[in-house]
Image (cartoon, rainbow, N blue to C red; front, side, top):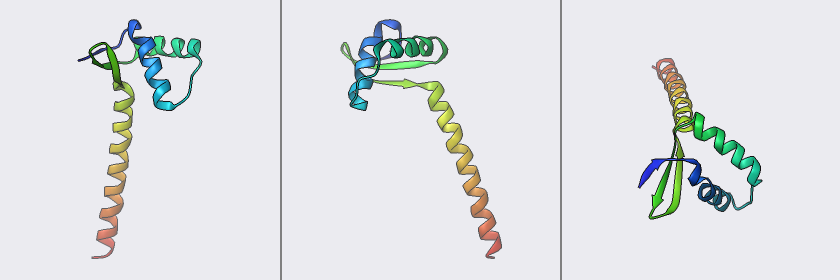
Length: 87
């Protein structure tokens, strides 16, 4: 099941992040950051029964996609310039 993250999901997302990063982050700082993100970003959690197995921050994904598109446009421009220079 996919649903928008809420404050009740925090503990499980925190554990997932710590497991994925193989470290323990400061719980209070993480709560503060996640609480802010829940209200300012569209964060979704992926649940299998009651376990959170993943999460996605759409705002970060959108930013990364925009960066990839800009790089792609730049590479296309360079490639076209190179092809035109060699023909």
